[in-house]
Amino acid sequence: MWTWVAAEDLTAFWQLKPGGRLAISDILAETPLPDDIAHDIELLCACLAGAATIGDTKQMLAQAGFQDIRINSHALSQEIFREWGNNKIKKIVGNLVSAYVEAFKP
Image 1 (tube, helix red, strand yellow):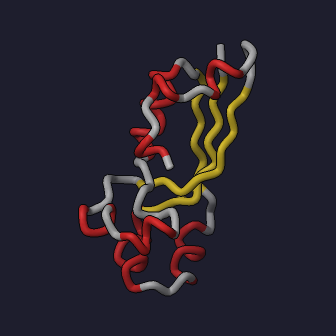
Image 2: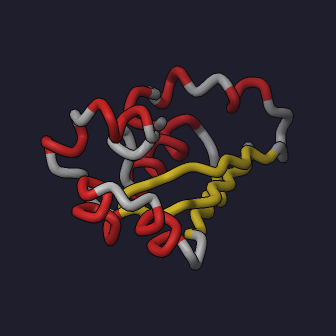
């Protein structure tokens, strides 16, 4: 989701009152995905190929003006992705996390 959102386009920041909280559940990557995976239509439709990195997500939220950015991964992320059974997914399963993202408007 995040790979196509520019910090200045993150309108959620402007819609929140001071002290407001942004909370999102998304799939993130620990490191950038290989090009063959990042451009795979099947994985893009499964919301995996477009996974932004944890670092890029934090940076984008900070550039938009958010503070106290927290990203927590789901403990069972790896098991969940393995169950999907796709060979392409198995190639990157160790790099993906199901994450809960929280950030606050100062």
